[in-house]
Image (cartoon, rainbow, N blue to C red; front, side, top):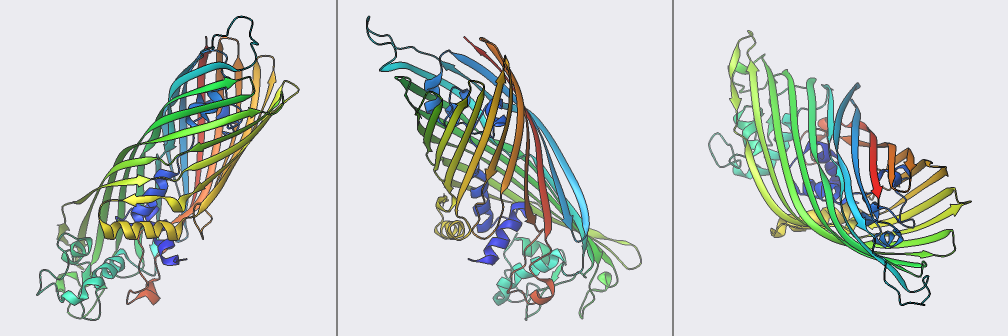
Length: 512
């Protein structure tokens, strides 16, 4: 396992650098979408593979369409509040972001199959139902913020590390092509944040600097589903659906750092004894469309027990990505007077690529207990090492796909839930565990849910509360082990993040 790649990747998930590892992290982010579900099944941990009879079947196991006995239409709204508790260099900071939106809307048409007069009404093909729905499958809205005083490194060390790759180009003061024009390391050199030395570039900033990293994320993934399901003898249920997927992801990052200038031989007089404040800003705008297919079956083993199985094909995405970054540096002389600021226009890098997410396999078991209780459990297998990236650039593709194979592995997710009915009311609870996609990093998520519902023959309303939590890490920059001062700086200070999402879902539906 390449631990350097793993650390770089987990850092870039929050830091947002445009490198091969960033493409690998985006590929994972866009492949970890969830199956759509109504509020009813969200309350039951989304364990719906062997249950059916819900519009969410279009996005999960379309065989569930075969269990409809009436036509149906519903709409679901959601409110999410995401909180990130960060600890960085001994300082705790909390950031929150709320979002209200449409989670699901759809309908199913029940179509009873005409039977010859005198035939058994309970055998053969009994119904062929079809429907369409919209489902949100991923929510990117969040804010990450952490701050602290760093005694070991500066972002200028990271710039120096980048620039040292070009040492063979000589001194930028005498060779204008020594560093790539408009590159981040060139911006840093032009802003006097790094200096050239034949033994390696070095920072002009001192240690014990104040750092702050702030990331705003918005966007979501969704699917529009078209499917059909059949009922054969009230025993076998089959279905298939085609899904048109879309994604929109925006990430704005603001990194600031302030401290004292470093003193070194040959330093320009106006910087001696002064202070600096640097601001690094980046913006990523990503959008894409794609498609996948789903097939499944449900078998009624007994009157009260059902077994379900479905396969979700890879999603084939076409994605457009635009990444921009800029650097702004301001200095104050030792006498307190300001030096005119050094600014750089944002540099934009546009990339189009194709992405193939992994296929998913689901199995489920459900049981009705005493006509009032329902228990359901699912297990899901997905191999994230099979994600495939294709930009048309052989080097980028080779490195990105190598990162994917080296870092990711197969994951097993499981879901369990229950429902208890008394008169027209229902109480529900569930648990959903999402396994880690990393070979050597435990980044799992646990989702607890509970809900209540009210149903009549023609109308229903369901309300669900969901709490999701997971832990991960972030760093504002990653310094390579080849850096001359790596023994002092290390790879970079790490922030620990505790992510908590509190979600509320409301579904209103009618049967006709």
